[in-house]
Image (cartoon, rainbow, N blue to C red; front, side):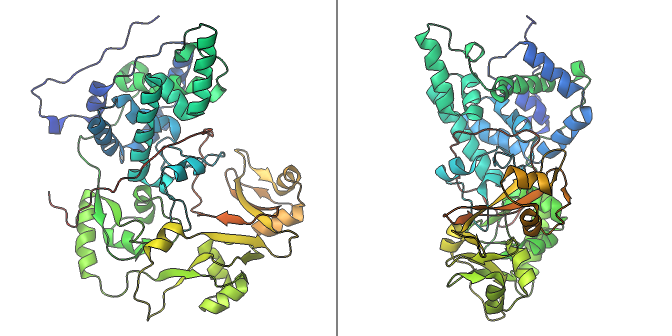
Length: 458
């Protein structure tokens, strides 16, 4: 067994504001080290991909200070700050094939259980602040339950019920109940803590692995800026002086083209851009939002809904992610152009509960619309159709491609599967798929309100 890796500590008199954030993480690590062949295998894997490590660090640089602050406030071990490296490579828009979403990879049901809202307008599983607080809440509860951080991490990945049953099985057989002694763990869970340990070891001794970690300053990357009115995402990005992609990296939870102040009353912005946004917002003339919410009074064809709201059918379908030949069920919420006489913002009730319910035209008994992802090597239309008992012509029609076409790796694929139940479509920001899905039996978050500023001053 190798000797434990040394914890390098700062001179106590060094100015804390000048400390590298990596050192703050190193100093706060407290989860017992794991040392086995899987750890060494993952060390070699990560060390052999220095460009991948640099990309992960580049993404994580936006969020790590906030995560470290939250962990320190709760008195939790700093090892947990590295968990998004394993979950999503620090991609807040990540979506696994198992439908786990966001930087901390929450499944839909567990996200709803813990008030991470998922509706037409937003998916709080991708919200940087809400998902971080949620994940740390859940990890804290798992530690309370199991009394062991390695078991808590395994439960975060595999589900607490599964880990509890594995522990009880070992207890009945009078075997040790530590993580390394448990039997029946799925492959992903067996590798989960070793992956985290490998990243920990690289952070502790990057030179030993030939890795150069970019320096992370020990101060906030972003500020939370309050908004009081609905505002188009493109306009918000422009007022902040940010490229749209960079704006979405900090505000990835939005499913539509408009941010609703009743649902997400803040935006996250880099420090200097926050100041610029506050000034530009106060000087802006004209409407902030060109979109509003409209509730279908009855079940309608998309074309008929478009006529009622005075917009082209194709435009309405594109903005609301409606596949071809779908009925919009009564009570569904669509975003539609905001008329010149519309002054009211979308209500809190709609901002929190709006759903889009679709049913295919002419499908006996209705249908369930679902969105899948093509595999890492892509999929042909015919192969997708065979797997789901459909015809290539149907799959091609729903996705507006030729029956002989091939979907690109990770591409979204819309299918309509026969069922008597309606489908509820709660979003559609087309986030990227993570390389490996994370099965989730349980996830528990609570989304506390973020700190907000109306003006930033250094």
